[in-house]
Amino acid sequence: MWLLRMNLLLIITLLSVALTLSNAQQASTASPSIVFISPEQIKDIGEQVTLNCSIANVKNYIVGWQKSNRDRTKESNIISLGVQLAVTEDRFRLNFTKENNAANYVLEIHDIVNTDAGLYECQIQVNSTSKITKTVELQVRHPPMLLENQHTNTLTKAEGEDAQLVCRAEGYPRPTISWRREYNAILPIGGQTFTGNELRLNGLRREDRGTYYCTADNGVGRADTKTITLEVEFAPVIRVPRPKVAQALDYDIDVECVVQAFPAPAISWYRDGKQIHNGGSYSISQIGSPDDVTTSVVKIHSVAAEHYGDYVCKATNKVGQAEARLNLFGK
Image (cartoon, rainbow, N blue to C red):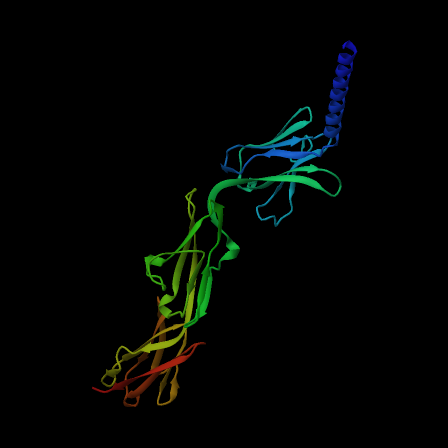
């Protein structure tokens, strides 16, 4: 009986030793893994963030932090390698702790700035061709900023064409873009405001020209506003304030026509099919005013009998031409 008990005790001891050796062998051959990484972080400018990466079976593998932008369109930047920081900014700190075969790599960023936003990737370099990674995103709240290369300050279209006014902005949270006209005039699509990156205007009319404002706002800091000038090209339209003008002989008289057009038109005057020029009995002047309006005035000095008759005002630009007639007669 005593011998049987000794044999059982020996067998149990041997099994325990074998199990311990087996566990130790498995532990020595187990691959490293990232068992925890911090969840998404949302911070304000000037705050501090802590990013934690916990590694199991770390052994002698090299662990590092790397940063890339959100859409991964630019090259990544190495932040740390092993227990050493790869950046020289005092705002970055790396804390390393290790217990048994587990390690924590804690990256701290102080006085956060806008450019700190991005994807932070914890990496275990397994060999020359493979690595184990997990990523945490850092979002930084910052005021909206309209992108200069995404909008045009002046847009020129012909009457009847379609126009597309575009504004895009950066910022976190994502900014909302709204549109309005100068003096809060009614938009061509109706209403005084429109929300969206693109304001589409179909079948432009000359009344649609003017200044448009796009404003980006996300509730952080000040909103950002840009102006876009919409120019609508249209053929001349002529109005004659006095189609019939009477004047006695030897007195001066002004005859005029009012032209609205864009681009600015070339205006000429004719009498009996012959063009009138400055000099002699005639003085011609042009007076510009807002809304693409030009008033052309012909002053006739000391009216004579040969000055009576029909005068034609003709206006021409790249889009088209127009003419109007008035009559000068004697009292």
